[in-house]
Length: 235
Image 1 (cartoon, helix red, strand yellow):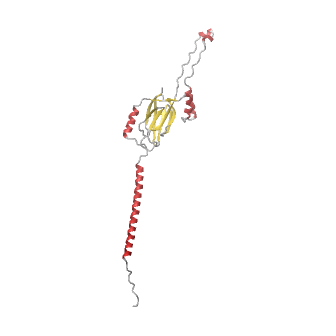
Image 2 (spheres, helix red, strand yellow):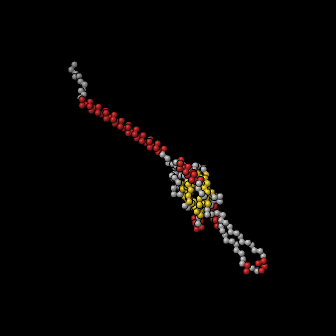
């Protein structure tokens, strides 16, 4: 037969070497990509896990909590700072009362220490009037209500803790901040201001402090629904 038989193409050592290098690089590239992907996934997972595990709320140790409890129970009555006469209107406005309650409180405050009823001079009376018994002067009335300044603040992390304060019929719910919230309250007749835990914010317990002027009291770590009474007085 005159047809030519095609012989297989010869392979040179150089072409074999190039093929091996290409395959090796491909394997290394795939391994590197897999490593990078795995490392990234582990990093994201670690970040998410650490974010969940890290405390966002108050982080008071057991020893600190015990110290706060003991110090609170050992506190003498807190001296309250009275609202000056010139600041009464401002104080009532800051109490967030409805108009009827504000008017009633103002009337209650104004009903204090009125001047005694005057009696006629004996020299101006006729002999008959002088012999008749004269009405005795009414004793001075005592103030039924007095206002004092109170400040509530968060003693630890500002994480959304909420408390309610009750004093002599006045109630106020406060979201605690580090700066504090100052307002007026009536002096409690029983000498006790009550504070109730409403919301624990981001956890760790409700951390609240109460002050009046330079006097201050740090409450024990409170739970939601817990009520504590603080003894107070006014000179």
